[in-house]
Figure 1 (cartoon, helix red, strand yellow):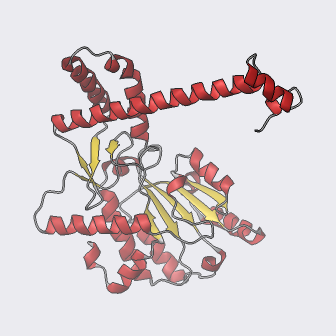
Figure 2 (figure 1 turned 180 degrees about the vertical axis):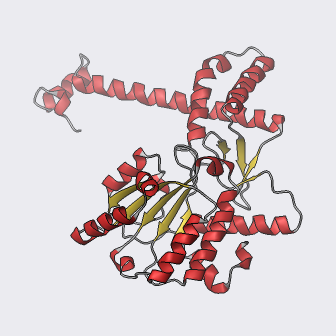
Figure 3 (figure 1 turned 60 degrees about the horizontal axis):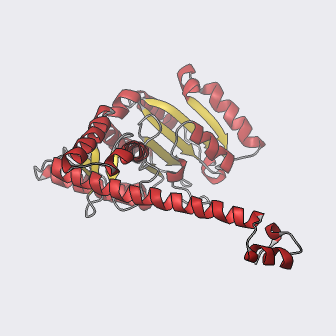
Length: 333
């Protein structure tokens, strides 16, 4: 099932972003599906077709096939009002049993209030033993809820909800454009095997900003810092190349890849040319070394300022102490 196979109504519902994949994976490398309950009834057949389309997307990811899919469900008081008929609930349960992907974790966020405590108890009662083990309940999308989700490795910074509860669709629109490009290229017989829509946990991403919190980039920074002293003291180009090759080997050893952003399409492409890869790592080492030096200089300036405010023996400090009543630390001038 392709995006263009969906009807105009289904595409409009899909583009609303009530169901979307987060751009980042969880702590275990699994894809995370966010689902915001609709505030109006959706035909059962439309739901099933959209779920089948998402299932096709999930099935292309090897890690998700191995470890399952993570789901974050959020609902509001208006959405809970719409209840499915017994026949629809029966069809839905049968469809879930036939779903090709395994749900490894389900996080369900319900509205606050005593009424929804009863709803939660009923949901636990009617769910099976396997579902109860994998399901966690929360009250409202509060900061406490986000901290709890964070302990399970959920990238809460990518949750597409505004403080007022509105659904953000920027990442979802980018995902839709990538899928349409991908499906069109496959129809034309183009090779899309090197396209990456959701980078892996240990992949190193090369782009201008926006990836400082990616797990692979954080590990890459630690590798650069561990090799920085030797890299700055290199005596020849050969020594620098050997250090870069060691960094490349360690990233590959963790089953990571080096990915570069395709700015026109929005997807990632693996860097396979060693010359290009060495050039990018060399630039990254240079930039990171400048950041380290700037950070050390800021720390030196901060420590010097503290010593200055604590007092000294020079004339300027004595003058400040006199103006501030004999205590330089209290001066705010």
